[in-house]
Structures are given as structure tokens and as C-alpha cells.
Amino acid sequence: MEEKLAKMQRKVVELVQERAEMEEQLEEAKYDGLKARKAKLVKAVQEKEEENQRLKKQVDEEKSRYSKFETDFAQMRFKLAESQSEKEELQEQLDGYADIEDTMKAQLTDMKRQMEQKDGHLGRQKSEVLKLKVSLKKLMKRYAELEKQLHAANKKVAAAEAAEDDDESAAADAAKTGAAGDKDDDLRARYAALEEKTKEYKDALTNKDQEIQTLRAAADPSAATTLEKYKRAVQMLKLNGLKQQREFKKRENDFKKRENELNEKLIDLEGLVKHKLALESELADDRGKLQIARAEIDDLTNEKEDLLDEIAELKERLATYEEEA
Image (tube, rainbow, N blue to C red; front, side, top):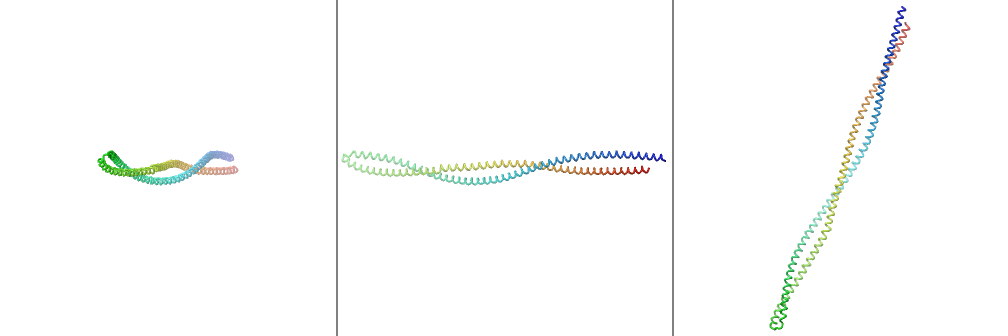
């Protein structure tokens, strides 16, 4: 009986030792697995934290870039508003130039009409002068004929005076001389009338020439100079307006190009923001997984403690068995 009891005690001791070894191995295996898993989780947590820091840094950089972009975009909008204001001012100037051009065109039209009127009056004056010249030529021709007749009459008078010695012929000659004298007086009167009429025609012709010279002096220099001045002024206004329009068009194109570039940057920035949100969402998922892993670690720790409690209880029971044995 004692031998059987001793065998049972030895068997119990062996079983207890085997169980203790198995529990120790199990505990070591679980502890090693927990340590490895914990180390893996800690490493994953560190990697996620590093990635989080990197993402935060990237987000801060993107925020800085976005802030700078907003500042640049606001400045561009302000410059664009200034450009729009300048455009309106230029448009007002161009409208003013257009009004000035219309006024100058009206003045030029009036001047052309006045010059045409003066040219018409000058043409009429020239026509009258030509008529006076024709009349003067006719008078000069008539004047030459009268001079010839007067010269012939003077010859007859001289011949009559040379024959005064003969009484009969003197009487006859006296009669002829009287007739010739009357004819000579008539010729002299007609010659004087022609000279007076010729003088009147010459005076009228001189007056017409003076009027023509006055009209030319009034119409040609000042009117042509003023007309040319107005034309140059209108041309300069047009050139200035076109130059300002080209400059404004160039500046407007530059602003549009810059605005398109900023819009492209804004699109890229929006893509980065979306990527950042996706990374933050992924980070939140990883944090959730990390929380789950930590909960699993806590569960394993609790399970380990339960096993330790169970082992302690088994040891107490074993000790009780030994005492009973």
C-alpha cells in the first residue's frame, strides 16, 4: 500500500513537473509571441508616427504654398482690378479722342467748304479778270487803229498848211483844213475817251488782281497750315490710341496667362489637398488598427495574467495534493 502510494506520489510529481514544464514552455512561447507581436506593433506604430510627422510636414508645406498662392492670387486680382480701371480710363481717353477727332473732322469739313467757296469765288474772279483782259485787248486794238487814223489826219493837216501861199488853193485848203480840224478834234475826243476807258479797265484789272492776291494770301498759307496741323493732330491721336490699345492688350494677355498659371497651380494644390485628406484618412485607419492591436495586446496580457493565476491555483492544488498524499 505504501509502495502504491509512493508510486502515485511519484507519478503525481512527474505529472506536476511535466505540466509545469509545459506551462512554462507555453508561457514562454506566448510571451515570446507577445513580445514579437508587440515589437512588430511598436515598430508599425513608430513607422506610422514617422509617416504622420512626414505628412504633417508636407501638409504644413502645402498650407504655406497655398497661403502664398492665395496671396499671389489676391495680388493678381488686385492688379487685374487696377488694369480694368486703367482700361476704363483708357477707354474714356479714347472716347475723348474720338470726340476730338469728330470735332476736328467737322472743323476740317467747314474749312474745306469755306475753301471750296473761296475757290469758287476765286474762279469767278479769275473769269472776270479774263473777260477784262479780253476787253482790254480789244480796246488796245481799237486804240492802235485810232492812233493810225490820227497819224493820217496829222499828215493831211501838214499838207494843207504847206499850201497856204496859193489863195484859191488857200481858200480851198482852208475849207479842207477846217474839215480836217473838225475831224482831228473828233478823233482826239474819241482817243481821249478810249484812253479814259482803257484807264478804267486797267484800274478794274488791277483791283481784281489785288483781290485775287488777297484771297490767295487768306486762303492758301493759313488754311493749308491749319488743315495740315489738324491732320497731324488727328493722326497723332489715332496713333496714341492704337499704341495704348496694343499696350493694354499685351498687359491683359499677360494677366490672363498669369491667371491661367495660378489656376493650374490651384488645381494642383487641390489635388495635393485631396491626397493629404486621403493620407489623413489612411492614417486614421492605421490609428484604428493600432488601437485594435493595442486592445489585442491588452487581451493577451489579461489572458497571460489569467494563465498565471490558473498556474498559481494549480500549484496550490498540487501542494494540497502533496500534503494529502
